[in-house]
Amino acid sequence: MLEIEFHDREKEIREIMRILNSRPDLITFVYGPINSGKSSLMDEVVRKLPDDYVVFFIDLRAHVVTNIDEFYDVLFSYEIGLKRKITKSSDVISSILSSTVKFYSGFPLPENLISKVLKKDKPKNAFTYIFSILQELKSKDKIPVIILDELQVIGDLKINGLLIYELFNFFVTITKRHHLAHVFAITSDSLFIEKVFNEAMLHGRCRYLLVDDFDYNTTKEFLKKYGFSQEESELTWNYFGGKPVYLVEAIKNKDRLKEFCEEQLKLRVSQVLDAIYEIEENKKLFNSVIDLLKSLIDNEKIRYKKIDEALRFCVRKNILFLEPVNRIVKPQSQLDLLAIRDVLNERNSTSP
Ligand SMILES: Nc1ncnc2c1ncn2[C@@H]1O[C@H](COP(=O)(O)OP(=O)(O)OP(=O)(O)O)[C@@H](O)[C@H]1O
Ligand SMILES: [Mg+2]
Image (cartoon, rainbow, N blue to C red; front, side, top):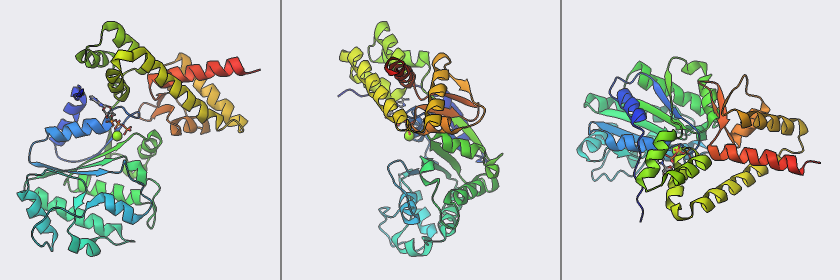
């Protein structure tokens, strides 16, 4: 079976390692277009970390979190393979220290502490427990790292107010105030990142790390490793730009590359058509969406002034990617740009 190796990201890895080698001060938001390789990058970083780092990975990707219990289920791991009976958090630390594992999916929580730590209306209890784990790890010269993937999943969850605020507060406490742990929050939801960006409580307390699709040269080098000719490589770039997920698929479909490219475009055109015909009845929104898409045809990216309904719609439908730091809007991928072009052409040819 064809094994595809992790490619490049040297600059991003260097930047993250630089952060991890200094005192935790800020929360790091890792953001970028969908499928740009954010999660893979963080996995690679974790693989490279020396043994004094202990990573807690909170993966909200595959979870629907609609209440606090479901959130706790992702935040904690209840079975930690502990042989001894554990009654306090310091025993959890001894277990972590004596283990060769340096990666945990969730914070280990012994069964007999569950009812004490996890209260339905008091997420603070859970944060206090995590705080004590981090503090004890730090006192034993370990460096805790918390990675949350797809944090926006809990963006609207309310437990006496929005849980996300409680969580942000906690992160500020463990980074800026106590320097206990590194915190990385990954998201591909650009409307969420935009909200975070404008959130007063986070000003001066976080940094933003953009993980974009590969650039032209990186894409070429990647494809070359798998025997792509100059021509095959150009064709792939013209359809998919440097979007890793498509490049991987193109590699797998190298023997029918042109066909594969066309299939993917056809699929994306159909999805974009579905999205925009959903709002056909709302003439005002529909026309603004068409105008917005038209403006992107000639310009690779545009600077936005404010996020109006049309822009919000296209971003929510993952047709456009919004980058609040540089106030830029662009198609989610080269394939989206091609699809937008086709959709607008099709409209022109079917309009009376
Ligand atoms: N640096 C890389 N080298 C090789 N393949 C990569 C790389 N980055 C990503 N990929 C491929 O692209 C796929 C998608 O990447 P990944 O899931 O990391 O993107 P993401 O930005 O986290 O996506 P999402 O927006 O859905 O969260 C991976 O499963 C992998 O096959
Ligand atoms: Mg991801």
